[in-house]
Image (cartoon, rainbow, N blue to C red; front, side, top):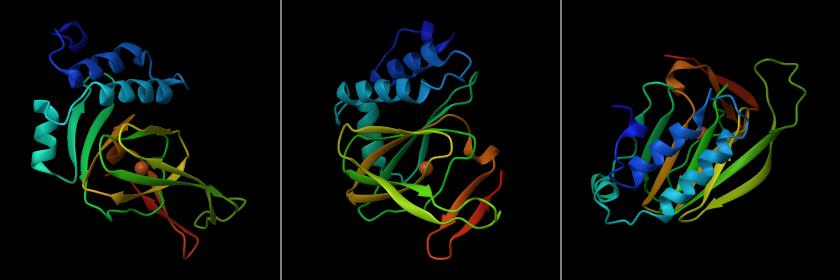
Length: 187
Ligand SMILES: [Fe+2]
């Protein structure tokens, strides 16, 4: 039975059914913002002792796949990040991502490139914006957005919605110190 036809059992099932309902062909540029609104609604309607969320918190896994859509390929990841958890600037290749904090505080820095792109392995980055994701805050990063994350208060439950499986696409990491691009090829 398709997900949207099933009686939604909890706020997470409802959220997934709602994302599926707005997905269409997956190409609408407004989709990241629709998913943002639905994730905000999910967090507002979920308590930390709801069984599905309580399990995520109790397990405390740094990363787990909560849902993979069999028809559209989008993935909902759930993370429990300890305070201080951080990563280097990266993009999501041709994909987009929606980050949301259910608990804790995560800072996400968005960068812009200041080079002209003429050297394939070089990129100089400048900080463009700092998004502070406190509980309930959800921010989309569209195709090409370079960003890095830092858990400033934790542990925190962080949701990461991926428009597609990142292991199947080519993307990039960036060294701020060396001004270089580090390819992250599909597996
Ligand atoms: Fe990311």
